[in-house]
Each structure stands twice: as structure tokens, then as C-alpha cells.
Image (cartoon, rainbow, N blue to C red):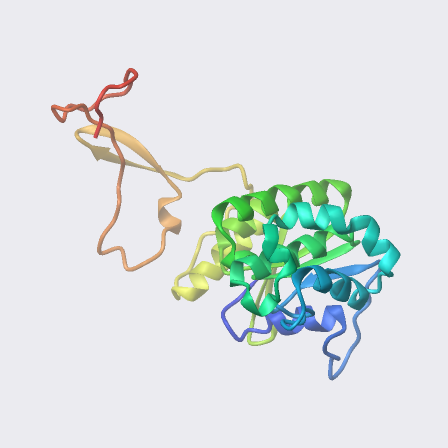
Length: 252
């Protein structure tokens, strides 16, 4: 489940209540199974300890014994892939290395519920893709994932459902594409057409170089429309439109 909303809308507060870091002023939250979370970057880690020592510290915070962490540490170290930095104080780590170790600990304890709050935003492309693949494998195993991100593309790729909250209130819950479209429309203060069937693609005809082409979902595009990309085409070195090419040829 993806959770989206503007800064200050209550996303992180909701996650902290689910993990037990904060207590709701009213009502109650029920969870079933073990929970592992990545909230603020560095939460649960001591910067005056090495990365290796923090594996055990963070595992203890999540309720695991030293023997249980011993059984998982090799997998944690391999996935984090930070080399000799593992044995240096974490206060010397970059935000990316922090994220690598934190994510590796969180996923390798095999939780029933995994909570991620923007923790992957600081990772490099290789590590982020590695994490996305692992998250999909956790989904297939039945792990519940709560994922907060401002990247609606990532939300669409990972999540089956999405929650849009604003000023601490639920605005919409349901199909990921519909909810993210509503969120983006809300940001740009525009109305959006909700398509009931996800597989349906709305097309509008236009012409580029006197050739009629289809542009998907044109009515859902945002912005003030003063500048629009209406199509993309490929050309040979003499600027003639082409539909196919051969190896080592020049295209524009």
C-alpha cells in the first residue's frame, strides 16, 4: 500500500503510530505480526558505533536476540554492500551508505509488515533498483508493505493500492493509478477524469509531420498547458522521418 500526500499531511506520523513510536490521541491501531521499519534516515542507529555494531543494535531494537542476528548478519552485509565502511563509525557515512545498511537490516529480518518512509530517495540507481526487485519478491511471499514516497512512478510500480491523505485526513483509498492521479490533480489544483478500468487507455488524435498519431491520456496531463510535448519521432541524418534503422546508423 502506497501512502501519498504533501509535506506535513501526516504520512510519517501515521507510520510512527503504526510502529508504536507515537501514541494516537484517540482511537487505536491493531497490527498482526512482526514489524520492521525505515523511518527517518538513521533512526535506530548510533553514529558513534560502527556499521557492524549497529546491525546488532538495530536488531535488538526490533526484538531479535544476538543469536538470531548472527544467523542473518551475512545476508545483511552482502545486501548492504558497503565494503570496509561496515567497520567504520556510522557518523562518517554518507546518507546513501546509511540507507544501504538500514534497508538491508530491515528486509533481512523477514518481517510480516515492512514500513518504508522515503528511505530510498538517497540511494544510488543501482541500489534502488536492487531494493525494488527485493520488495517485489517480498510482496510475492505475502509481506505487507507500507511505502511512503513523493515519487508517484515508484508508488505505481510497487503498490497495488494507495492512500492519499491531506492535513491528517483520508482523501482517497483504492486503485493506485486512480489515487495518484487524484493526488497530482490536487497538487496542480485541477480536476482529473477517473478511468474505472485500469487497462483502458484514452487516446486523442493529433498530427506530427502530417502523420496522425495517438497521444495516451492527454486529458490527464498537468501543468498550465502553455508548452506541450505533442509527439516524439526519429529522423535520419538528413532529417527524414524513419520507422526503422540498422546497426551503427545515425538517427536524431
